[in-house]
Length: 159
Image (cartoon, rainbow, N blue to C red):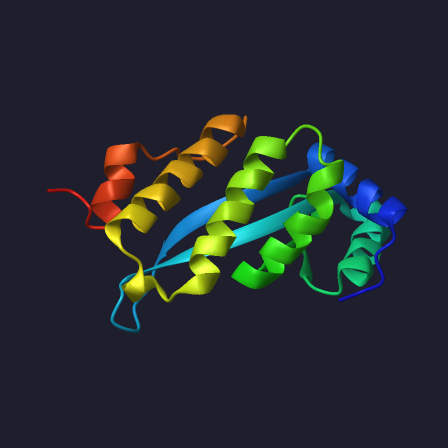
């Protein structure tokens, strides 16, 4: 991981609060036994004309990939359960506006980094659904919010 001063972490947390997002997604997969996978993401957004900040954040965090979108925006995305957990742990003291989402993502990363998906029990899967809903309900923009019942169905938790 990159060099992380408290000032750098506070700046990155502020950037995340304003121009970032925290996500827990359930993705369909074609390979493997399980037909789904969880994906945790921290994403920072910036107008492409000012994307240098994203490169600096990536250098400080020591991880992430940068891509330019067709709408003139550039994104820095960080994935991976342990990486997300470590980054959130470092940023959490400085996050102001996305504290609930950050705590939910941190807890989900803890659950998902301990066991493979096939070894998670129903209690853990239901907890992950609750954490997804915390993030969904606190985010002001989501393309399509799934209900608890829809998430249970995806995870085969319906009776």
